[in-house]
Length: 282
Image (cartoon, helix red, strand yellow):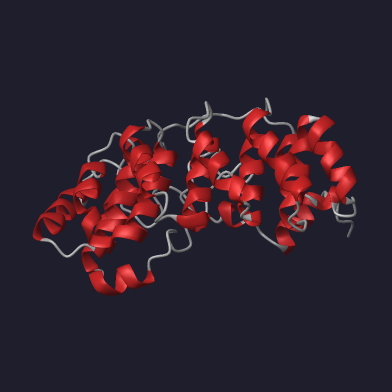
């Protein structure tokens, strides 16, 4: 019998995409009485129009054999896709002045926001004295994902030295991903002293912020926190309800000791949030 499936379909059978697992479908394992009871929406959902080339821009294999001069040339004069790949590839190059200078220039001046984001990510690996200054400058970038990556950079470089910068972001930025990263960084630094900020975040309009606030409140031993977590078990968003339920069951001390900034096996990215490595890893 002839197998007429495409190579893509054959590959899915051999190595299924976990995102297509029926077990992760909205409403699975719940008692649904009507279609309107099924929760399928998440905030900030957008339908992307990225080309296959754009979606593959984070794949550095095409430039895997390129020498340093070629990467620097691509970062300076290449297409958007070339510049994105070059920025990421330079992360693994030995640290020298040419690499740091080129990445710093791209991070602060490139017209493409993905290039700026990838460049500051790559700069962090080099930990040059200029990297922190670039990251602080990018906290005011027009693109929220660049700002979010800048917080990651400061956290990785020295979160204690940049505590004031990160705290200002938490208080003043208007994007959920940027504020989430700032809250994670500060919680790793301050622990239970973040209770007031996390309680405030638990009332945010963004369900993503409420989810992460509920998650980190698991590390705060306080009656007000437990009361708020019980309230969040009735939150309109199921992901917030589930997170609050887990936090109520957590051992606060153990949670703080083990907290690394990422939800275990997190499969709840907002649509579009993982495009081109946009999920920050604090």
